Image 1 (cartoon, rainbow, N blue to C red):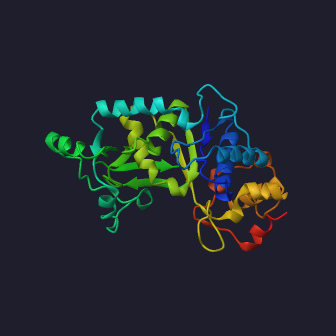
Image 2: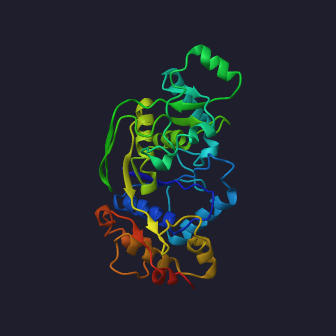
Image 3: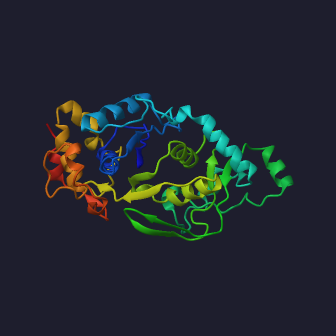
Length: 319
C-alpha cells in the first residue's frame, strides 16, 4: 500500500506553494487508496515556532485535506514531530560513524564561502565542499579538535547517481555531485538530510511528492538510505509556482499566505480550484473540493515547467 507524506517546516505561514504541494501529495495517495502522513520537520529549533505548526494544521484542514497519522492524531510511528525523534537520528549517526561514512570537519563558514563563487552543481544546497578535512591525519585532527568543535560530514562515494523521478523523469547526477555534506552541525543540530531519511524509513514512506527546489537533496538522501541499509522511497518533484513578479511564491510573499485568506473569509474551494488549475487538473479556475479531484488525478497532468501565477488569478483570493 502506498504511504505518502507532507512534511512542512513550521518556520512561517503556509503559502500557496506549500498548499499546492500538499494537495498534490494528498491526491497521489488518495487516488492510490493509500495512507497520508503529516510530519512536522522542526529539527532546526531556532527557526521553527509552535504557533506556525498550529496554523499549518488549521490551514490544511480548512482546505479539506486529512491524514491518517500526524502530530495531532498519533499513529503507529509516533511521534510525528522531528524535534521529538532525536534519539533515532543519533542512532543512525552512530551507525554512519561505525561504518566510516562520516568524518569531522573543522572548516569555518568563511572558509566555505570563499569557494562559493566557483561554478558548482547543487547550487541550492550551498557551495560544494572541497573535501578539505576528509583526508586529515589523526595528528591534524587532534590539533584542530583542540581549537574547534567540528561538524560531521558524510563522505559521498565517487559514483554517479541515477534514479527515475515519477514527475521529472530520469535524473542523473555525476560522481561526487554536491560534495560531502553535513549531517551534524558544529552546534550539535542534526541536519535535515539525515532526519528526513531516518523518518521516511521508520514511517514506511513509499512515495515522496515534493517541490522541484528539493531535487538537489535527492541524491544525498539516497546515499544516506544506502549507507544505512535502507530502501529509499519513489520521488516525484513538481515544478514550483512563481508570482506575477517572476519570483518564486514563498513565505516572503505575504499576500499568498493561507491564514490571512482564511481569516478574511475566502472560501477554501476557491483556493483548491486555483491550485488544481495551476496543476493541470482543471481547464479553468473554479471552486472545487479536494475530494472531487481524486477520481481524475494523474501525475502526468501536472506541468513539467514552472507555473507563472497571474494578478487576475490572485485577485480571486480576496473575500
